[in-house]
Length: 303
Image 1 (cartoon, rainbow, N blue to C red):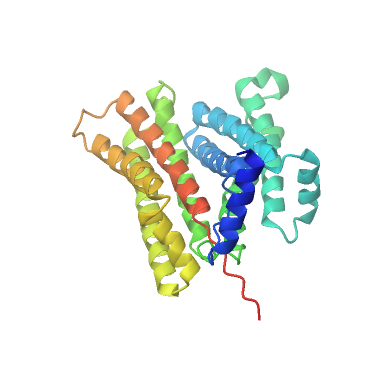
Image 2 (image 1 turned 30 degrees about the horizontal axis):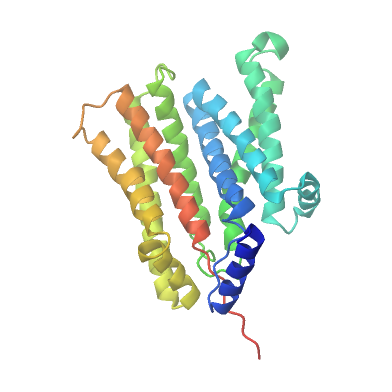
């Protein structure tokens, strides 16, 4: 069976299903959309935390991750000229706003990093250029974090995504990812002078908020009594995405870091903090993978 035959058979099966799973943003090139959203969200969080803690490792990581996230988005849309067309619709499209946010971020972050790492080139971080670049990068990061949540909430045809909690959930994961990247820097010897206890408290706070929001999202889907939303939740809890949820989100993303932070396996050290950071980041990816892939369309009703 050829790839086209498989896609055709899959389409027929989906059309036979009353609650068709969305595949455009999850399979084939669509998988790169998940990767792109994961990377730019992590990048924005890392950049904001890097600025807050004056951590060069987090700043460089955020810049690099944002660039990779932009490339993943381009792979997803396949043709770069589509991105240019999308960017003209910023008044009505969150996708367009997301692209602009990435442009602002990359320009501002690049200039700011030059002033930070090579101050002899255009002056240090106290110059007007550096401060303007930092402001532009912060604006871009905030837009990126907001765009990821609102772009799904705007998809009214997929009830599971149509939740007012979605934007806040993505904000909490951006904060969790940002704290994780600074923790990772500590594991590599960066971030001299950063208080690890304060950083861990911030990570735990963001993690607790994300967990509460996830519970509320699931409860909200059941409370809505919308069959499409309920099927999406069942896909996550006991269906095709259960492995990503239990092994990826819960085991790797929550349980493993909790055990390590508690000191059950080993005393808290740079290596342990690095492992916590990597496990946290991996869990965040599985969260986005599961929540995006779980989307199911409202059924077509022909009068």
